[in-house]
Length: 117
Image 1 (cartoon, one colour):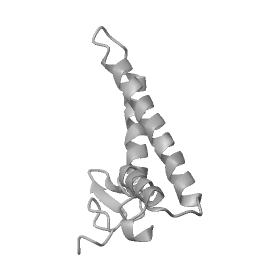
Image 2: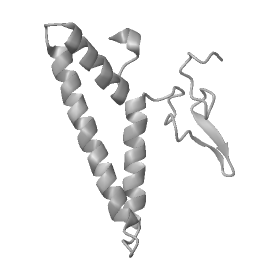
Image 3: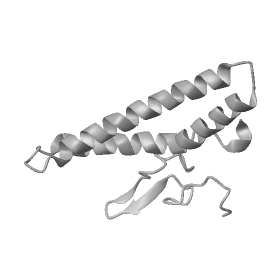
Image 4: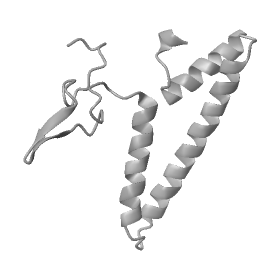
């Protein structure tokens, strides 16, 4: 399998993995057999963090509240970058500055392959 193929590396493109209880849906590709896009992975990981944080009590260490704040800040930053990317992409004026902003926002968000833009 070539590195450029987008086959899931967890299930090797099969969509399911072997467990003690028999075959199960691949947790990374959700049965699709292909690696999810970077922005999908980021959102999944944020949701997983939120689920784990919801089950933890905020003790004296303050870690769960700090992580909730960090997840919130990351989501806000990604939302702002998505808005910036959309405005640049929808803008009919493709100046070098607009193109650079669009590529930088895309690199941070992982929305498209670089050759797709």
